[in-house]
Image 1 (cartoon, protein in one colour):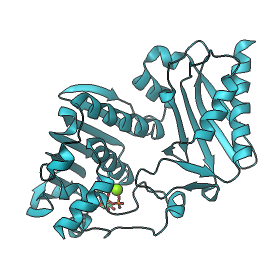
Image 2: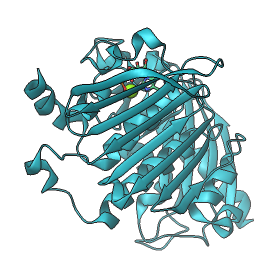
Image 3: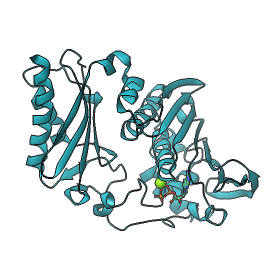
Image 4: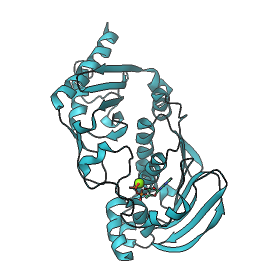
Length: 323
Ligand code: ADP
Ligand code: MG
């Protein structure tokens, strides 16, 4: 059982950033409106995520660490039909198999909590404790028992970069949640959680970038688009500042990016790219996702209509700019 978990863990837990992603997704799924993340040494030493969400009921605390105990669906196709980010029920067992986990969780406001300690998939402690409602999850010494995987970890800066990217994506797709990210005591990201996407953009890219943003709005028969795109004067040397959020989920789509860039085509020099956060709303049946743990790449049913909408609405706001 332990060995099976270690092997399967590799699919979900590739690096510290994967742990951060799974823990933050769980915090959001639990209805948390405040999610704080502390990492030490690029997450290789420790990762701590706290939330003020629902907490885990005492009788469910151990089961949460059993593989697939909580799996909610059978097909990747159903992914956008469900509202939660997690769906496979394998994150916690996978993380616990390759690290030292400490969990403190309270499902109510009466101060009664549970504390769990698991090392390398082995339950070492499960006792009553005291805490306010929510969950406090610490993962130490990731891959301490899988040296082959540990060897593949890059520098602290590289791992931290991946962790920051995870938090940026979460913050951009959930402006209603207040996030902080701290590394070795330094605050790297702080969002207010007041639902204002522009504030999140300012927190990530800086206030001058946020000031250069134009409000995007539009709709077609099947799709609604909103978000922000940068004025043509404000450009970057790569596409990393182009974000797409579909039904509240951060996704990657080459087609969407191309549609956006087409709108900028005559305005930007070659090799310069905008900053953009494009939010799309659609019926869940119109979007399909590859069955991959990363859950990022998506396909759309009525691509032509969607890409045209993106191009036209971006052109519309940029057009107003030029005039
Ligand atoms: P999944 O998210 O796919 O259901 P996970 O392994 O990530 O599977 O989590 C297992 C279960 O543990 C979740 O379904 C949820 O019930 C519970 N859980 C995990 N983290 C939290 C949290 N921060 N707050 C409340 N419940 C949580
Ligand atoms: Mg999960």
